[in-house]
Amino acid sequence: MKVVKTELEGVLIVEPTVFPDARGFFFESYRADRYAAAGVPARFVQENQSCSAPGTLRGLHYQLRHPQGKLIRVLRGAIYDVVVDIRRGSPTFGRWHGIVLSGENKRQLYAPPGYAHGFCVPDEASEVAYKCTDYYAPGDEYGVLWSDPGLGISWPMQHPLVSEKDRALRPLSLDRPDLPDYAPPGR
Image 1 (tube, rainbow, N blue to C red):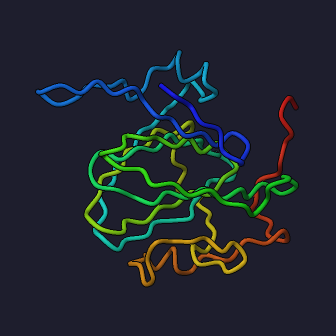
Image 2 (image 1 turned 30 degrees about the vertical axis):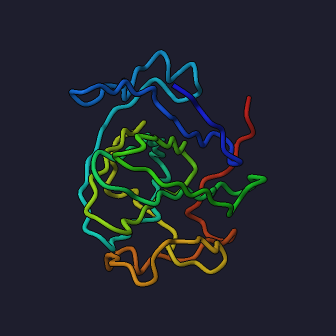
């Protein structure tokens, strides 16, 4: 497997080694020791799966008191996956990284705690699976407005299907009390 660091601290792209043959393909989608050695935490406690119709946008979500690192991959279809650094005091606060994840390219994205996460489904229904480092906590749901002009995310669609809840999210700003604080590495 190949692991690519992004410009955002701790955000990693995992490109697994795929073994294709006449029957199909095989690859290790997760192996704790190898992922931990590559900088992805070895302890995931929950896995989620969603299916989204074409034109759907989900996000940008995070938990504050129960922050979740997420290892995201696509089983079928393709998504444009985005993470935003929302850690107050971070040198990359407000910066984002986007990548196409698909059932075909089999890439994975690791978004550590302290980042908001979302994705859109540009073309065909897509199934997404993601492992989480902490449990979903219903009273600890927060988010950032997907269309926040201050972020300038280049979503590959104009008028996505967005939930009422996600439409009501607020833009990112330093004066928001519901943001995590940045802790430099090694602290």
